[in-house]
Length: 162
Image (cartoon, rainbow, N blue to C red; front, side, top):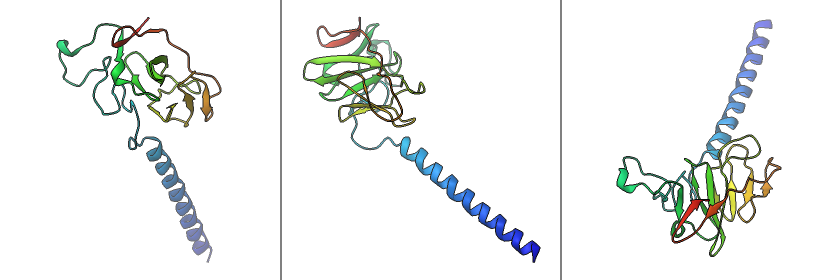
């Protein structure tokens, strides 16, 4: 009988372990999901998946590279959204028509790179912190500090580092 009780305990432990692992797997999958409507979902891309001025498509030659310091074209940054330029670790946003701002693309909670801009917020997938595009302040999640503002210039049709 003692062996029978042990078998039940092991089975129960395995079942609980499997359930816990399934929950972790679901949470990881939810955090890494790239679906839905987002602006600037991939680093250096626009909402339609095209490379932003500062981003480079795989295999693009020298002729397709933007001048040094160029982050994005104004036309690629939707009002209420933005683009993430991973090479510069910067997120460029347009909180209202004609107003462009840039922030560090590194979350102030634990240093993860932010991954998308949507619905007026910049989102970090690591712990689901979100930041307002208007001023970089934390809106939700564990982050308590605002994203650092990055100095930019928005002359002509491009956004560049200042």
